[in-house]
Image (tube, rainbow over all chains, first blue to last red; front, side, top):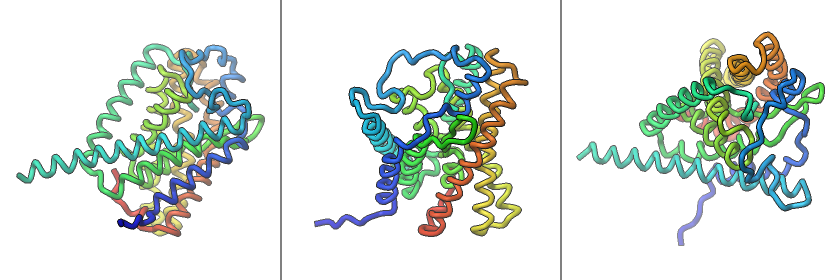
Length: 104
Length: 212
């Protein structure tokens, strides 16, 4: 049986996911741009999104806001890892194929 | 500083989409040329960390909050083109799934926080480490300056887009955006230095990979 060796990024990914559990403690004050838009009177010009999936980092249908935020954060963090890791793998795979083709 | 839809006019939307698309095309080509085995997990981890950390808004002053951007961290660790790819992936996911940042404003958001953020940070990081020396101290001071400036310059770029779109005059938008983000940039600098300090302490080899 092949033994799984723990790599640095396994631990790093766990730390990133653990970070999400602090998200309910995040400040809910407007961010820099929102604050400027409020103060300078152009916040009403913002349009609502035409569709909503996990809007405002709250998983829909969950009453407890902290749980909804953590769940949204875990999905996003794991999702973006899979997407970028996968994309990087594909780019690397394409590079190898091109390199071997050039060698021939 | 994720711009929602409604703040930008058609010309600004078209211009920023074009520039960002061109930048991403070039970034993909650069990545195809240089992507090594070590880059693959680093790309994924940087994106995951940036997404998670961006959810953690910290209060600054006067009922305003800021959050980590991550463009500088990515550009310093893996290079500005790969950093742009990471920022674009994060921003696209935030826009499509989390309704953070508008669909039409996505080009501008990738332009400000990806292109401008990564390249201003990378340039200043290279410049400061050249003067400070390539040791740990120089690296950390250089990354603080690069991280602070990346947020400040990206926010200034955002204020120029607001002005170009006729949303807010430059004399109002620029000092307001630059002022708040000069404060948010301090948080950006501290987080970037903390992460790079940790990386240099436990896995020094990760900071020495080829930049894309």
